[in-house]
Length: 203
Image 1 (cartoon, rainbow, N blue to C red):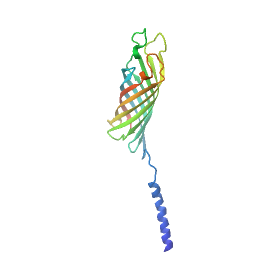
Image 2 (image 1 turned 90 degrees about the vertical axis):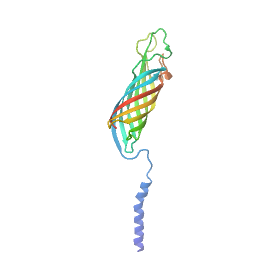
Image 3 (image 1 turned 180 degrees about the horizontal axis):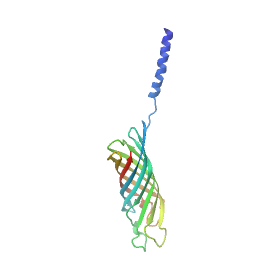
Image 4 (image 1 turned 60 degrees about the horizontal axis):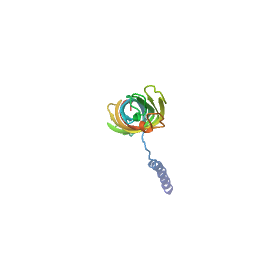
């Protein structure tokens, strides 16, 4: 009987070990399985450039990594450009009548989306890349264009219109650096943007 009792006790201990290990699994930020998708997006907005309002247009494309708990990561590329001209800051180019400028920028974007299965949900994204600012017409002196570094963080609100179409709206701030062109500067090209996006794909 003593031997049977000992063997039974050992078996109980052995059977409890996996349960104890499972109970002590590390907590993780994301849980469950992973689904994959992707989307393309048309973007329209308004921004502040050289202290003036300018219209924005853009396109985005992203790979969607969605976790079963509803959280998702979007990894992709984006490009934006001013769809309307703006004047040099302070009208600093003497001898030129109504010089006009435009800028474009783009790069790698990453977005974190929370509870994407909800009708209305939220996301936070950041773009890291480069841009170009230029005069629309030839000028008599100095450079006509210049490249710069850009970071653009922001936040979005998403609306699930259908399973394959989402409407997003967000506020962003564009940080421009290493601008070296007469008529603008780092601070002049940096500014707030409000954007609306039309997203089509598998989410």
